[in-house]
Length: 553
Image (cartoon, rainbow, N blue to C red; front, top):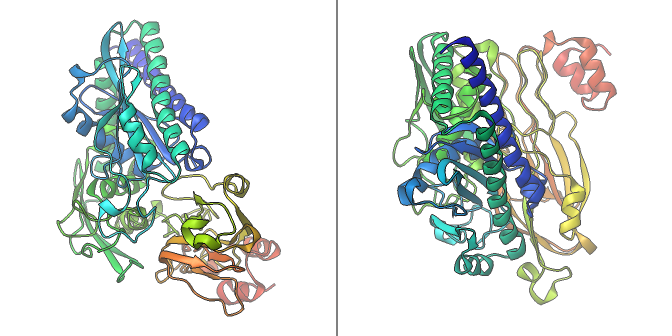
């Protein structure tokens, strides 16, 4: 390929990324669920007719994007491309064919140009409610966790599948939002398809085959070159989760080879009886992301750039849950995997990895009204999820970020948006002093949140929290971040379980103290001016500054 043709292909590639970003932004602008429009808990991408992801939107989470990259192949296995027609939309929330739990809807839509199918658009969004026990760990099988949607047509040549929508509305506590989100997902794929056809017309492209080949070849070559630059060896690490019935140990042995990275999860804890289990696609999604952040962060994410990362996930371990194990809150375990991958890579390229962070989102599902209090209910029925994060781990040359989601990347939901759609009040939402792990670069700070229902009515939380018994660890002499805490605002500071459905009594508030990120390097080597700044801002107490950093005041 000559230089001019290469430049044109690169322009087309960038244009394709713009197409899928408009696809994602259409979903954000039209979504009914606050989880999508406020937090951006979604993914969007374009695929070739073999189900290989060519490009993803900038907006989105790794758990959705990288597992969605596998899911389109499952759609094609049931509905081959040659059987698809303009106006068709296909949907599932199957955790093993989609993105890991029933609260994620994945929609696939064919794109046509001049009557010929040229590509597939796919997206995933986290919705507020899909029925069943609701989002939480209490289920003992996936069938208790909500409405299970196989791969079906939700629109047939532009006509809605009314039987499907009847079942959908009947199976949810939030039927309007759920139906609206399905229409939003289909609309965003249509927007992507429209922009793709405009692009193909502009460049007089009869198919995307040549562009796909260019993207895949360039991405694979660049990723393999990045892997080849790593030290060769085998590197082992482990990380601990609070678990549900018992603590969970995640173990990995990573082998760096000339053209691939192989990760073996042998030694990881076995399956849980509750919904913290992780389907294998979700395990691969976050493991690949953690590796990619360190090894090849600048290379666009697509089918080819993910190929060199291979996983061995033993049967019977918590990262390889088979049907029908419960998986509703698979993120609690799955979002620890990037920290585990960095634990391995810290032995190969220590200058590139972060300390451990709070990792798993603190996203309490809240419920109230008659479904909690019966006839004594003092507020209307509500079901809401609010996304929040603790601190990220310190970086080799920079402090960690405070109240920022890593690895999920979702945005913190504004309290005003949540209070607007549910009868809840956020009495406090502030950074948590002394929660950041001390180090040459310190971790990010966690948050303190205090939540109540209107009129101080009784309500419930379906706790799905972690990093309480096992706080984020520092690296290379950095100290651990503060552990999380879950309880009530009563004088005794009643402690609640970190996982499971619990009622907050009338007159009481839920208090969450989110974990801080671990520190990096010797705290005594930290710039005293930075310590003084944190003390002046009320983020580090004078006592902690003197004790941990040797600050002279």
